[in-house]
Length: 603
Image (cartoon, rainbow, N blue to C red; front, side, top):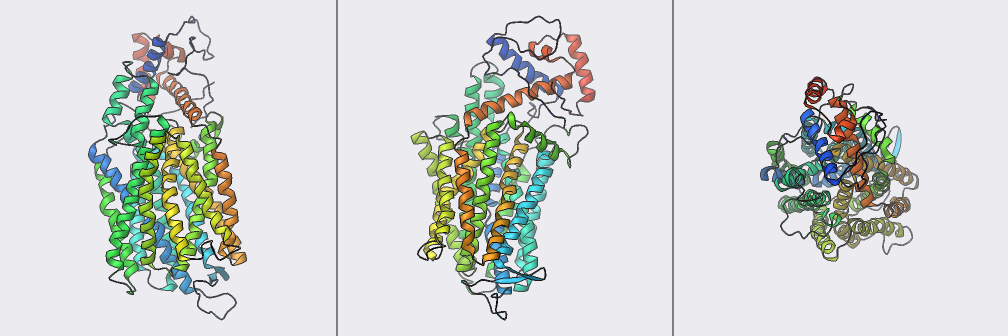
């Protein structure tokens, strides 16, 4: 994809009265542009895009149906992470711990409080270090997937097939984990855990990229865009409010509009709530296996089977009821294998055009690294303490799930009642993100607190549920507000890259520290530092400016693409000065070129 240099173009929110000069000398006289003419200009741009097929938001896109919407929620309900993110790691760590021995002894079995090592590349390595290496590998390969294939999901129907393949891979390997019954199988457990977790993490990112488009084609949002906005019954700001509300809360019946950002939370809130409800239901169902089969060596494997089957039963409906919403064709000179690298490079080059978006990416890079690695480290300590009991893990998970569901809706009502901005609510969750590693750091100097007692793991799960479930919803809401419309998969892929690529660093740094010191708690000071730095950076992100920058970003590229596809001058498109002969000729020429989908350099 060719680079695009920014150039001023008209905006529906632009109050200038002069027609923009696009640097092209011709004999067309300068004209005064009234507000009505500005509206006609915007309408012209959309009409050209529709006729020449250069807008991925074409009018033949299907309207979102109720079946499609609920199948979306059900998939998210099943894709809750109990299997790949909790049970599988515990089973993997169980195999490692039972295959290992205490360092400096004649293969003396490990205990829940002793250091533990396993054979590794001709030497030994601590169990915690191996688990962190596995997580580092997960995030490394996720990053490659997001860079390589993330932007490709914006084109054609590639995104829906990519999600299907990733989902099936995760399902298959979760069933495969049932075969782990003996400690010597830990290398196989590691391989299946890594690949399944990669697939699981990728499904979350590519699935999250769907919700802005589902909201955009809800019936009343479509009517607002295609009728009310065109007929000047509402202005651009009011339409933004409608789309943002629907994006963040599809068909919620009790919304009182207070601001774009305050309501911008609720769709990701509902999706997060469905995920948390699914998390809770899965754990409760698993009690039907774990309680009567206490002491049975296959109880954990059966619980994992039940967990995965829950996702299969709920998730399959999305692939049945999802409607086809293809994006534009791959630009000439690119392929599904290369477009991702080109668009990511383009997105990085556009940092000056979207400074608030990329500042948020920097902050989230640090925050995700700190939170993801902290969660892994606390889980390692927790699994050791409960001796890898799926039953105890289920009780802890239920505690977290109940708190997550309560907080997901509770935060929304608090935000709506007190009219608190999304950014400020996000910062509240960030404070507790910083508190979690700080609590563990205290454990270096005292045994009184610092993840040394059972009650602290329940406390951790309560805090995580109350403040980190809304964290994930707010994180998605903020990027959805800051990303340019029509670039959903690219910027969600960047979001996923930021999340996963950052977590290449944390696990590798922490595993080296732990392997050197044989002390799990030595990783917390580093994690506390990067979480605190992230929170400070987020304080400087300006959401309103970022949304305005994103709108300008899209409008500039709309004009460039319409001009390239139509063969008409940009001034003619802007002013609507096109006679029928010019239009017919340009349309015929564009019909022969539009499959190329090239973007041209704007100078």
